[in-house]
Length: 318
Ligand code: AMP
Ligand code: MG
Image 1 (cartoon, rainbow, N blue to C red):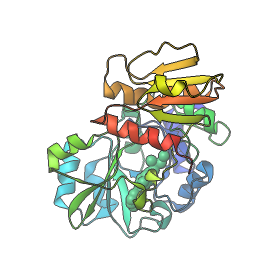
Image 2: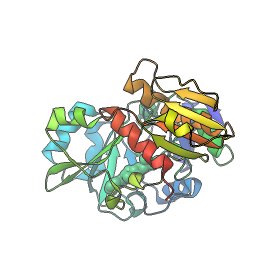
Image 3: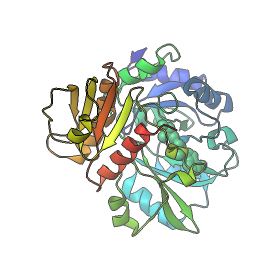
Image 4: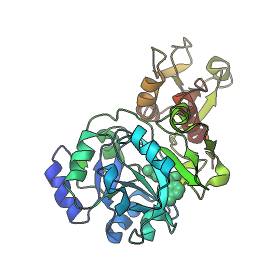
């Protein structure tokens, strides 16, 4: 049930149930990070493989030591710059953090979300919340309560409604190797913004490092409809005569009689707006009974890099 009743969410989470919650990135499937049975329920509902670790959401930067240890100086610089916000840090875990949360790793993913309802909820709980995105494994991420209901109306007794997600992309994930920061997943904070704080950062956002950050599995964020990614939408449309085609473009409307349905991410050419609209646009396209969806590659800078990364995974067949 979709509701704004925070007290009900508190009760359910205290009973070790799973509740869908809003964050500024995407909606999450949240449970008591300190209770193994509660966390296992997330994996069951999401049909997420157990080798995919979860992000632990904390209420304040000052509680980080309850979850992580050996925190490098450079991590604090990033925390000062970006928390609360869409930056997840991979840090050595405290012994009491369950292997179910971390998929057996000695590290744990942590962030402080920047959403008033998520923060209010965390303040009312005595434990942090483990939460992956609130979608079945490998499908399009949810950026509204209605998206979550579309996937999990039966399985969840509460979907806490916090409106549309302001960022619309998952968090950027940064870990540390030999005390140097490494970017494991492109996300809602651009690489340029991170580099302004800590200087040049090594990028490992690719499939070789699957086990390190499964958000990087090549197939992810995928519509059910066959999806293509191109620099030239009009050209690719010509390859599919007599098909029901849906199109997702950055800023331009394309005039072509073969297009049944079109989504434009940002008329103003604003990458933040495009990010905010990305998953909702893909959800709408995927519901239109199309034969195929053609998506346009965005400029390779700032959040355009993250959006292109998600589109690339959306089209992947494996
Ligand atoms: P989701 O919230 O569904 O985007 O998934 C959380 C993501 O966090 C996973 O897909 C991993 O990429 C990443 N993650 C969580 N814990 C760790 C960890 N200990 N080491 C590396 N990546 C992690
Ligand atoms: Mg996810």
